[in-house]
Image 1 (tube, rainbow, N blue to C red):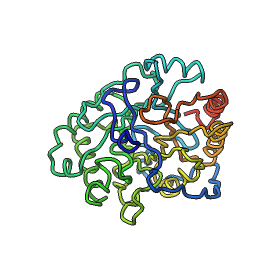
Image 2 (image 1 turned 45 degrees about the vertical axis):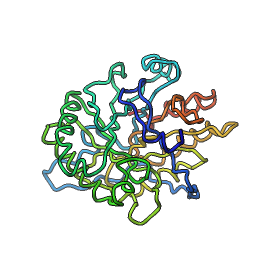
Image 3 (image 1 turned 60 degrees about the vertical axis):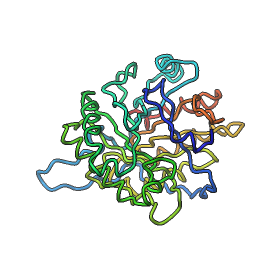
Length: 340
């Protein structure tokens, strides 16, 4: 199976039973952008938008609230030869803490969950829900499916992060603009229709995560990620997928999104991981990322791709590929930055 062929696969079962939909930067003809000098952000978050006297202050993050300078540290967790509870127990023993976000993947036509069995008690679910061709949504043909999904997520009875049709600015999914007539506006229309149906079903516990890839493919003027943005009214968190696959610096992967949206929305690094290039490279990158986080107070959540069960890939994304990487991750998780 080629790298791109696998990218369209994702399982219907949550967590330990689920195959992943990980994608790093496009490889076919892509080149890594040069790492910019990191411009240090203020040590406190920019002030939220002002409100008129007597009006309620905006809630950053919607149903999953955001606190400047504090980040939720979560994961997609699937370890070879282990059930999900076993993998959770191992990570708790190694790190002395549980994940604050439990990431699961679902197909477009799946019945979305109303609970995640065995997830840590205080973990916030993040449901990555695959999309489909825009016309399947904008035509109204999927309205009943969407309404049923909304009712199931409502049954959680607590806040849930919903990440619909991620990495739309690539060319590897059915919901990418490149596979829908080069028409980002169709994505926006589909998103807003889904959002409206969820509101009609009273699924107000859902926090909406809009999550492009860190770089766009194809690299054309029409395919910039901003063209896919549904609007502030329809988004609670702005996410991004970005992996250290070829030595990319954190600023290369995340600063463009941060600069574009952090004054308006909290940022979630919704898929993140690092490849071991030998020696201490993976541990060094995790340590660099930890330092980077101290300078970006509007990043309110980080969701690690913690797995070695990714078919067709030689890279092992799990955090404990060696003792130094595990130690670096543990040290990062113990900093005040990840105390949310």
